[in-house]
Image (cartoon, rainbow, N blue to C red; front, side, top):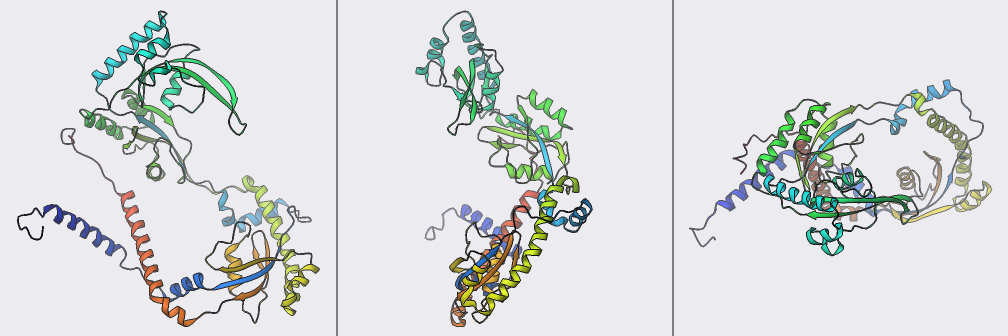
Length: 463
């Protein structure tokens, strides 16, 4: 292209302009990011300094004795430690009315298929064999004569299963549409069974005749505009009424938290939930295109966050209070043991035996390594190890939520200034790059989430 002045440079110019705009935004977003010398030193030590240690763990009894507390004492403890019971806090939640739309099809084509299925249904009701007609007309494995195997309830798409289960035994449904096309189906019963783990389940049996239909592009824009127009309605009742009139299937979600998931919207669950938690009841979302059609939602109910009342968590408070008192008592024993072990660190195991304590080991590990799920309070444990020195290898009691450590440092690699200097710049650059990338991604995601983008194009402009 460089050798041909007549070449079309417009696509390349557009690409470069877009890239330069994004690069400029990125520069602005991360301009204030910096890495301190402590950051570099911590990263170096996290990955290079190794330690080995043995330790004992004082664990209070699962049901502490002699720690019965009055309600007044428990209430006082709860009021003084409310932040410790944040796990019991009710998060903000939102209940959504979801309107799910199948892809657009040409009405005249759909009407033709529905009429054909109505005719086939009538022939079955007049006595013709379902299986024979299915072998002639179904587009779902004609050789099966329309027969479907026993299937666990919930195994079919909702729009199919709901229509079949609503039919009387051996009844034939009216024609209906699912994401696969148009069906008529015969309900043949349910039974109790077990899954692979022995758990009881309910299975259903049916046969069907399927006629597929291809989504259409012509008229699609107008169909989407009708769905988007639901954003202008006021209230859940009006939303559901108009959505049903457009052919939507309405479902109501469980109360959704920020960590929730919407089955009908696998790719954009978090985006919709984030919007719902920040909007008022009765608000209608943007339309979301999915692999199976479209989803739009109305907020049916908002449930605001609240801290639990004392009465709601009294049992939890009582357990924690009893554990804290037991740890207070146990800490005195741990202090006595630590003092004795410090007199002769080489006899740590002998000192532990006098207290009937098991000595455990963690060998040759770095500070950044996860030490397994059976080591409670790992951050405090590792900090305790790396704060020790060979000259003073026995720790004071280290209290964590479920017990108390006393640690004996066996070995620790020294800090080597020459190694630190050699790695300094590469560590600093890597930390800076990671921090800039994270800040830009967080900034860009927040920008997208908070942007209010509306599509004012007419159906003709949309093609």
